[in-house]
Length: 233
Image (cartoon, rainbow, N blue to C red; front, side):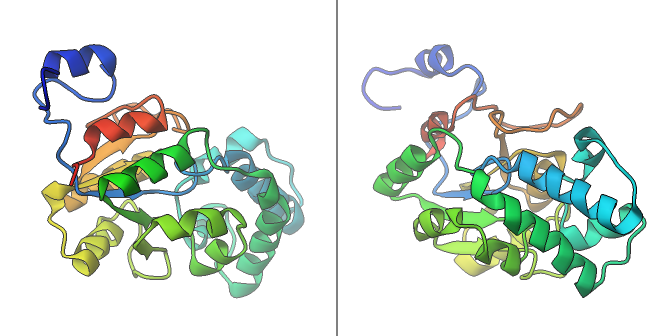
């Protein structure tokens, strides 16, 4: 604690962020998912999948029917909808995503949060289900990537979320201890990845997919509330 600001005071101000008994200044490594967490890409993801199904299977599906795919690497989604995970089909899906991605922007407060965390001296990372190719054609990455020291994509590990492998790879590369890291994401797969790696999890409620039984450690309602969880150097 600093000054006369007590844990109770913090609870009153951000009751959905810091649970009772938690030290709110403990994480030196804060790691983010991208889609639905840093950038509001839900509609882009769903519409691109909708187009692919119409093209390849000649059937129309609603955006809601595509929602299950959020947070899962593309090559794992295709067999789930009866398609081969081939380079050709992945490239077609990528083309639809690329056509739509210009409409997606960072959530309100994200840039301010990243600026503030950098000033605190916090180490920032990304763990995403996007492939390296999917990172390249998103214009938002030119704005966001300079904030991050380590970026783990689906191209960097053989196992993917909900496996803890991507977060464990982040810990390996940085030398960080699991208890000194916080992962922020928006799906049950993000939560399971964090829990498997022994890393605390904050649910990005501003972009989260509703899911029963998700055991998040923190529930920030706005990006800037995460400042309460950053270790100040």
